[in-house]
Image (tube, rainbow, N blue to C red):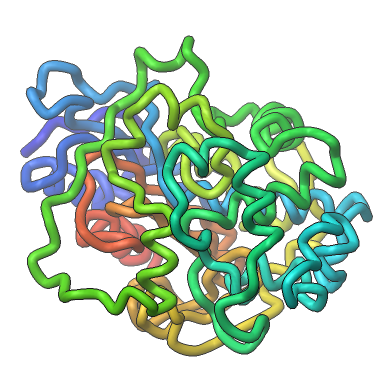
Length: 376
């Protein structure tokens, strides 16, 4: 059995076993953390940071979490709601006037958070380098027409949600998403989480290992919402290991952390808005997460998803996350964060070897199931 490090309440020994089994199999390096009612009951890690298996995954290893970052982005928006600075039902143009162009004057902030704005990617041609340039990227989004009628369906805002919600945050606070998250969320909570990665942190990053080519992928329709979203821009997995990626402000994609760091941030929701003696949200603001915005087949993901304010509220594609007052999301390759408000429970899983699929993997699923088995 693979060696697993860290702490784990005996009640959750099955989580340690599940992680060890994954590391004995296809997983390279990973961490899993569980907070129950404000207490860390699981904080485990194991495996390696590199494919050569020469650098062990340590207590302080961090990794690019891809779209788990969107969970923190949504929390940032809710912090502004709590402060009275942001109305989720107001037009985006109230905060970002240029965005009202080209048929978007009725797009509301809630549409950005719930992937229903009709603007799920950039019009092509649009490069990865363009995405790194905040001014260019947001100006282009402001000048686009929606690809479907806003509010009528979800279409996962895979690469650009950080720019859409982030520009609203920037217009309100006059600071970047990266700085706002550092000053208003990660800093107060004492969380090991950052948008991008400072140069001083590079030595503890586990580079992501891109997934194998998807043998089941068919030939995409170039004009479908799905293909337009993922080709505007096309993001190769290996880009996450570049200095340019780590330096950029990509509020939807390049959060760097580990399972402990993600849990430290997002248990704020599971615990009703206050964690570690720091209150970021009132219970009333937390409840806005469950204000359902759409429920149907997502135009980009091609499967049914039920979206609230910034979080998924349920999907048959992720059957191991129970129903109830539960919200979650994950990142390309297998990372996952689950907030279960009924149980005051938060589960995070972060790893470096990526699998095909945008949400979860058999590895994160095994650990989540082990947590709920322990609670059963």
